[in-house]
Image (cartoon, rainbow, N blue to C red; front, side, top):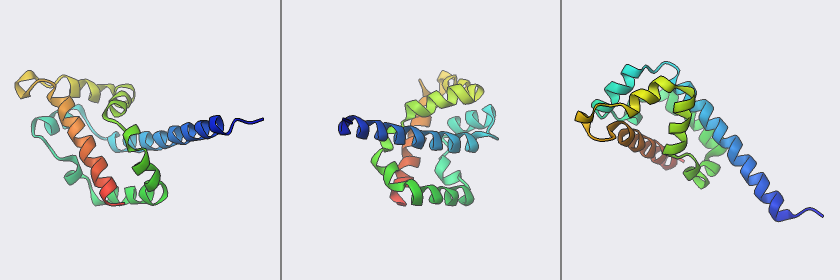
Amino acid sequence: MVDLGKFKSFAMNLGIGVGLQIVRDWFNEQLKNVTPSDIYNAVINDADLWSMTPSDVKNAGLKYQKTYGGLFKKYQDEVSTEILLQWLKEDHPSLFSTLINIPLEYGKNAGLLWFDKQVQKIKQEIINTM
């Protein structure tokens, strides 16, 4: 006999995994033309990525919101700064290296703190538009 609790847990984990892959693919698409210099300048100038995001990219995100919005809202904690940093390290090592090696004159862990602030703001902006 099938244990429905285990099946439900398996299905939920599978769904989260698929959702995270969709987010990872979108994240990589957004970074394909970003250079280490872009990252460096964004950190030292405390750039607000959401305000700099072109409207066509934001509008493309609406498509995902309509399809996956409820799931994203429910599982938003799965898309964490830590997982995005891991993806950055694996998929864009030069960007990751730049982010973690911002000179101390800009503050200890300035790159990581800036990145976390951007992740939290973008998640909040996405949730607020749902």
